[in-house]
Length: 390
Image 1: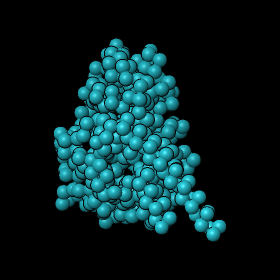
Image 2 (image 1 turned 90 degrees about the vertical axis):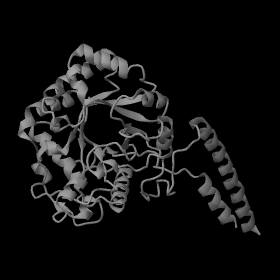
Image 3 (image 1 turned 180 degrees about the vertical axis):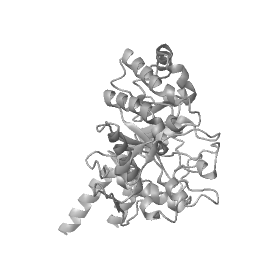
Image 4 (image 1 turned 90 degrees about the horizontal axis):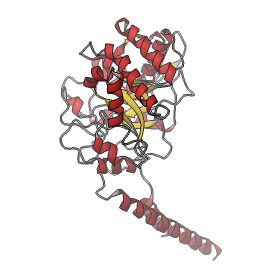
């Protein structure tokens, strides 16, 4: 009886979500949808999962205001269409004064991404504006005394690589190497990371016969050995990241940290999108989360934990393209889970949802629950000891 009561209280009052201290994990909070919950409910959801890092694809003032005085470290984005304007230092200063300064430091803005996948954008003219825009934004931060707290970079698609396998063969495409060198010089000087959008799903979808599903899903598998370094890779994501490291080394930059700005797996796709299933999405994200909880590094950099941002928090119903593009979310817009990641550290209720309770009410309730919990534990312990003496 005592054990049953103890278990009941443990289940009622235990803290579900990601364990505190998983500092190498963030999530992408996309907003290309017409049915998403308001930012305050999103903040409640992130808090319930104990996630402390998020990335948005703009500088939505409602989100920046709502996330103030929270534990969330936020990366914001200068949208692609703004690049041509912010190459002008005065325009960049105005952008920072409007979109960053009013919210910082109450809102923990830790990074500014200048554009998204500019090196491989369909508009090939944008790449010429990238480094000047980055330098101007950084200069504005310096002028305002914010550069120590906010790092400037840009995320790139893996398509920026000419070669990616084996990892040691990693190299950038020749057509972007000149601008890439300028960009890497900036990162090296400012201590900013290189961000990569890496999706093993795309590689598997394009060649399911030649690529092991277990290898891309982080399942147990023989893996592959890089013949030039003898490094063993048991998953594709780490191989992709190390290919980026080697590509930078070939341009003369060996000390820049690589972080994953996006990775994920779609839970639904068109008939020709092989592998886009609920089962595979659950396995990919579950196994990735396990990796992140151990703060692992890649085979090339085993002692440098790999920071990863999952894509994405929600399914986004207005994203263009194939069906998969609208089905990367861990959650549906109504707050229910798109599928159960089934990780013991994550809430295992299949209908985990965005709380309707305010953050203040929730905090007070948690304090009360904690007090009651420990009182019960104390009383039950005494009862057990007393029975043991009978």
